[in-house]
Image (cartoon, rainbow, N blue to C red):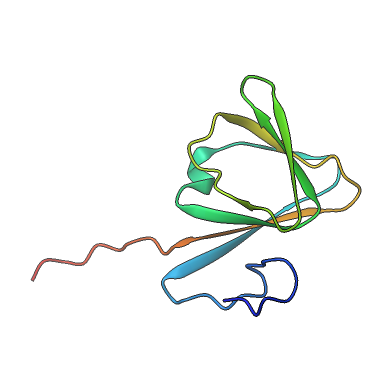
Length: 103
C-alpha cells in the first residue's frame, strides 16, 4: 500500500475492494463528540494537523500527522483540534457485510 516515501497515508494508498475509506475533517478550534460506532472496526491515520483525544476521566493525549490509531471501544469524550490548521483523520475499515438470501 505504501512506497516508503514520507509518513504513512490512507489518502494516497490504493485500497482493496473489500475496504472502505472515511475522511473526517476537524477545523481549527472545533471538537467532535466521541461516538464509538463511528470508529468501530477502523484503523485511523492522522493525515494532517493534530488532534487532542479527551478521555472521559479528563486526561488528554495529543496525536499528530502520521500517527496510526485504533479509536474503537475507548473511554473517550471528544476529539479536539486546538491547532491552527484543519486536522484530517482517515479511517479505513471493512465493507459492511450484506446478507445473502438462503438458496
